[in-house]
Length: 139
Image 1 (tube, one colour):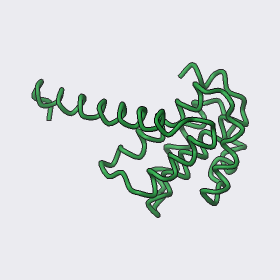
Image 2: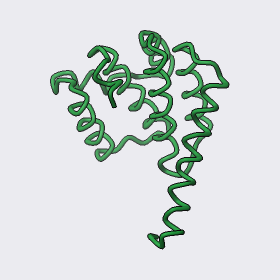
Image 3: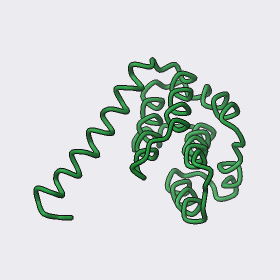
Image 4: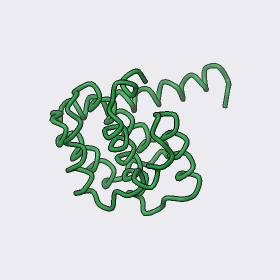
């Protein structure tokens, strides 16, 4: 999470907006998800007074324009990683989520091959964790 400390407040908000927009991709953004984003915002050091701004992204196109402000390649890759982890967390990676992740990555200057590599790494990590549960009998 060192990359978060190095981000401007504006980029932190954009980063969080990307996660919110992705969470909304399934058409559902409930109170638990909203509370989770609020807690993460505070952990990132975003003032509570700017929380409404974190939730304010209304379209994929608006988000794609906003993420262009993230110029640091490592931060861009971390955002794609976080988006892939969020999208995979419910076990169902939708076409809308995949498309949004790809558009966001490309807007920040990442190659499709790099985005795919990060996505595959996240999926491999999830599989590895699930295998560990089986091996160590922690169902």
